[in-house]
Image 1: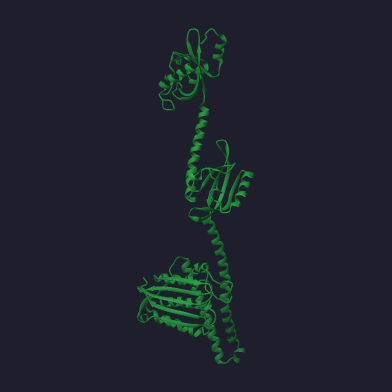
Image 2 (image 1 turned 30 degrees about the vertical axis):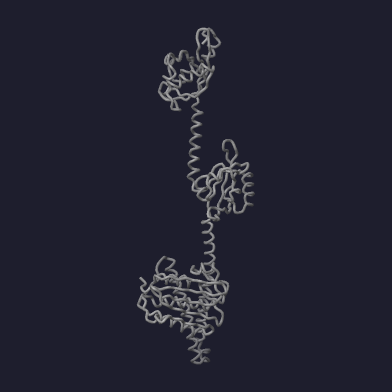
Length: 490
């Protein structure tokens, strides 16, 4: 240091930056700002000390302070100046990060290094906070169960995707980089990209934009897109998160459909209950009227009573269906009374009843010879309920003079019963819903009575016998309903 240069000395002493002089690899002088920065009472604790002695043993890059300090000074001496980052120790032992500037100055009597320290604690804290933020973002990005995409705003080319994107779409990160969603064929309706981007550019964000996407396995899924414009390395980019709402949307649609079905059921039930009730009350009123009842013969009165009885039976069957469906809705089993029963006799009884009471249709009973000797452990009344439901459906959906078959045969583990008709049949969608509660294949046809409960109850009865039931149907060709009953129900 030019000791006779008063201006330099004044600048050195008054500078708010820490300044030091190094000669022969030791500090030989420092200003008050240095003393204050390191927390010493005076410069005596700093001068005549090598830089590495008031430094941690190792620098942040893992190198020994002793070795690195010597190298930094050699570089400054060789090139005239050198700037680098360093960590020193305050007197209390705490670490202070610094930006060090070394400038080589040659005087008449020696070569010394003019040193300036800048405290970069705030910058390091900001860098650390940024690093921690980026690390948290990366963890959140990768751990997000929803597909996340980062793409350039300019051309929508993808610069990163998370693991959920790869899993859902079947497109690897490597294949996605540099491509856009249209090139990857993700949008089911490509035209929706235009309003999506316009909304993003107009408002800087998009929330719950619904669109369908092509994903792996030729599947189509519905997603809700939420996007924001962010800066990535000072370049505007789009951060997009896609929430798969396919299941949720289907569930909502199912609830809407179920509400409609229940509304239709209430309307139908009111009609179905009112019809027999009106007949009962009408015939009872005629019989109770002392004047009008005298004009009816005994045979007519018996007919009226028979009609009242039959309508009462209709109401009774509906009430039993309500009770059965309440058990099913509650997750309970339908009550069963299992006894050894000749199934062949039950089939013949059902066949004879419908042949007698439905003369406008043609019935045919086909039983294998072995059937007459087979005894099953079943609830006879419940199986009759099943047969009544299947045969009445065949009658409802078959044209006049249409042929209806009731077949029974043995299988390796029990008996198989089939009710077959050549009626209007059902589409695959109708067939798939046939066992749903409240479902009616032809709800608009007022001539076809029913609450839409029968087939649901039928399946429950068969399954509680450890049996199975299947339906095959084609529009205009008719319907086959087949159920199997094992020799032992439980």
